Amino acid sequence: MACHELSALRIALGELLEKDAHDLAHEREELAPVLEGRPEIRRLSEAKTLPAMEAALREALLHLEEQAARAPEEPYWRGLLLTAEAALSRLQAMRREMEALYGDLDALHHRLHRLFPRKRG
Image (tube, rainbow, N blue to C red; front, top):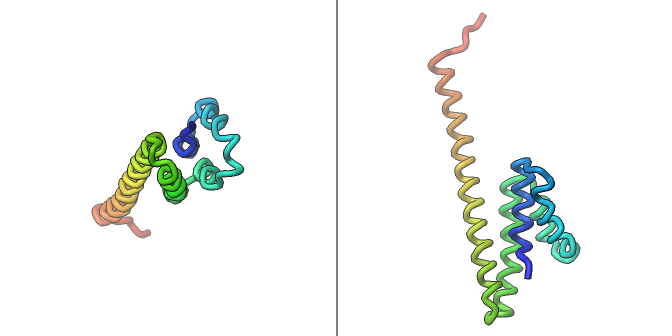
């Protein structure tokens, strides 16, 4: 059994963080055989933004929910589903934090201009 969802997310985050390609080689090798049959995993591994990662991971979660429902006696699928849900929660928290920073920077920029107005001339 392989944790394709986690490998795909690790690749996407690794690319976003500009990690060395060698660091992600294991995940790429693990995913290679499944990418054709699992378009949601391909989309997740190729996601370039946090919103794209969230959307692709949500899609992958649907697949995991189906797997867990088909094999309720197999705890692996339920464990992987819970792990992927936790990863989605972390992504969403990161995005909220980045959205807050984005808004804070705008407010700080305006405050700075009020404190130190630009001299015309």
